[in-house]
Image 1 (cartoon, rainbow, N blue to C red):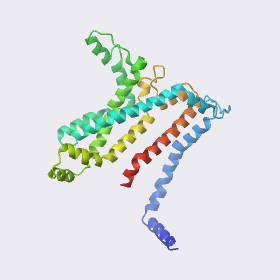
Image 2: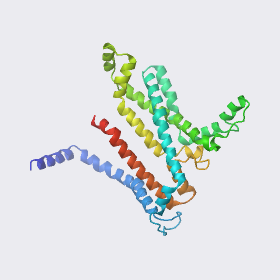
Image 3: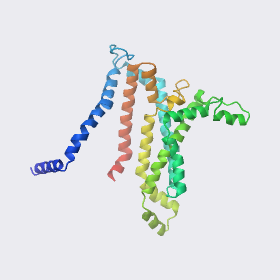
Image 4: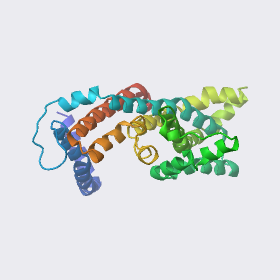
Length: 304
């Protein structure tokens, strides 16, 4: 019985503090926009996924789970998920370690370090579509940078983006270039958050710079590393903008991500029912991956 008066007291204090008015002003519009632009499209996609529908007129041909079964057997969808996984692996094992190493080298506040950080961060500021068009020109075997380099050696330049064996590798190179600065900026901020007093104490105790980095700086930067990997996984599952101008999913649908394949199905081929089923499967995968990642890696960070 004693807990109930405390609850009412907290409610009275909450209403008197002015926070209740703020919540009533700002929360309903946010919920309205979230419902219109997030909840309703997800529910709508789930509904359309049970129809064989091309987007014209009202959906009428109910096909039960046929779209989902077809998607799970679709080799192009399998390849798109593998491509998403490749982006995650390249980011986790190449991009993030290199960005972390460089951030540790240029994390001081000197003028030269600030300049280097700005240079590496510029590609991230550039729009994905613009970056895709720039690199498409660079990879062109007739008049791009690749053609120029091959001509120097008297060789015939390959059409990199037209060959299955090279197109995905070329796309991964662009991913490394584009998002390297973002991860580096995160790590620089995390490194600057480590107190110099701790490092000076370790130096007094006889620790070398390598030992201080390995046993003090990196453990204290663990939440930042976990966050960086989280952004890598989330960005891979949403990877879309750069693929369309760079390869458009080709050659032979070998460079599609799950989202670009979904876009191709629903917008270009007007297979709205099947595309909606692919979207629902992707949504479930995203939720499962994020829940698993949060439970496995982010629980300790939240406890801190």
